[in-house]
Length: 242
Ligand SMILES: Nc1nc2c(ncn2[C@@H]2O[C@H](COP(=O)(O)OP(=O)(O)OP(=O)(O)O)[C@@H](O)[C@H]2O)c(=O)[nH]1
Ligand SMILES: [Mg+2]
Image (tube, rainbow, N blue to C red; front, side):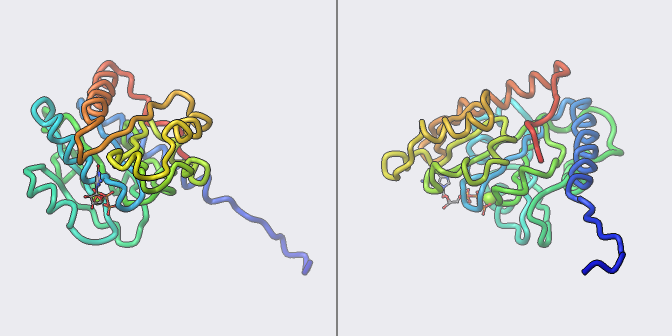
């Protein structure tokens, strides 16, 4: 119906993402100035994020002071699990939000003594952030981490880059988790890698199994390399988001 009223659609998505990116960049800058690398660990519910974080903590714990920020809609399940393994962790309850943003990450950093008002030597070298289990909007929102670690587990299938491209385009490292299932599932690792490369030509794609212990050393080395780059002033931030 044309009654003369101006009808417009205002695209709020772009402005929300741009504002989020500004806040994310400010947080990255602050953490980098204190020598703290933040890695955003993303993937579907049950893809193995917490189990991989436990394995990474075991691999890196002797060299880096690390803590974990857990984000879930509800519960302390993952934080209780990590604490039971002797890993320092704080739990964020997103209460319905399906991804983290920089303001939410700030709350977790404050609890770790890395808030905006904290001064002096940083108490940590590395913060692993387990984002809400979600293969879509976690990759679109900039939470202020320096690098994006995307997990895709073998049982989820090798077609996922075709259906959920944003995550794989935004990743700085793609971990094919539960790699001990390769051979038992019709997952073609080379086809998966080729699909990721179309979206993100240079990203490393590695099979990892927290259960079997494979690929963990390579992933730990990548994290240390990212921290080294950040300390040299090269902390441009994660791959494309949005
Ligand atoms: N076979 C196999 N199973 C794994 C591996 N890693 C995790 N799992 C199993 O996968 C299930 C989910 O693992 P989690 O680490 O809780 O997954 P998550 O991504 O943290 O899950 P949410 O936090 O709920 O999104 C558990 O039953 C794990 O034991 C692995 O490397 N191999
Ligand atoms: Mg988890």
